[in-house]
Amino acid sequence: MTEVRAVGAEAFDEIYPLLRGFPTNRMTREDWRRMLFSASWSDNPHRGYALYADGKAVGFIATIFSKRTLGGRVEPMCSLSSWIMLPDYRSGVLQLLMPILRLRDHSVLNPTPSPVAYGIFSKLGFVPLESERLILPPLPGLRDTAGALSGSFTASKRELERELTGEERTLYEDHSWCTAARHVLLRRGERQCYLVATPMHKKRLPFAEIQYASDWDLFWELRLLAHAALFPTTRAVALFVDKRFVGRRKPLLSVAWPSLRLYRPAHKGIQPQMIDGLYSELMNLKW
Image (cartoon, rainbow, N blue to C red):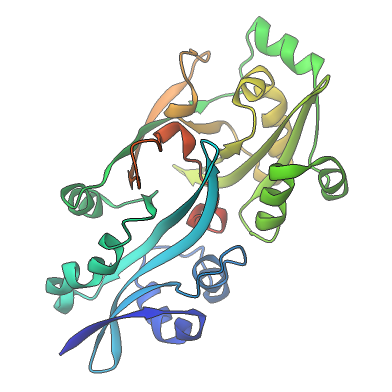
């Protein structure tokens, strides 16, 4: 007989054997704990839902809860991660997912679904959040060069703490403990753009993926500076940016890369461009 239970931080030792089934050798035991069971920004004690059979966890899906200000409203969010089922219990898929489907007052995100998960969640009412990312090599045009020469940046913890205010300061404090997050402040005149990026590898090459920008227009104007700021800690040969943040721009020599992301907004006012990579597995995922 199987049952689904909401699980908190105390259940990590029961869930960890399942997490070891994911095909990654970059994540240690403590990396998994930090990513899924230690979200300091959430006041929700639930860290996911587990399917149990005879007292043993045989399926799991992580829930990373947060509250975001979107369109001037505070919106409850739930970012999903690490959905896994033991082969003999895959008939219990819907049983495990039912608590997720009942979160009607939350916008539910699925930032990195597998192809199988993408098909299942699409049938359960999730819609595309993203279809591709752009790879941006550090090849400047005249406008990019002029922008880089007119701005400055800092990645100093001391300077970030001194210069960030308001919502950006809160975002920094919430994510400063995350192992994958890289924090940069771009400046030009009176304007500034707070960036959060994460390192990643594709085809054994290092990249940096932009997860959040407080001023996308300024980011694009100072893109070369952003790359220079991130290079010391990521060794990135290029930047990845989700296409929904590109708008009508046509970055020089950019290359499209498939990036299938899903979400189920709580209401029609929550558009894809409002959703970034913060408060998700991406802040601690090593890949």
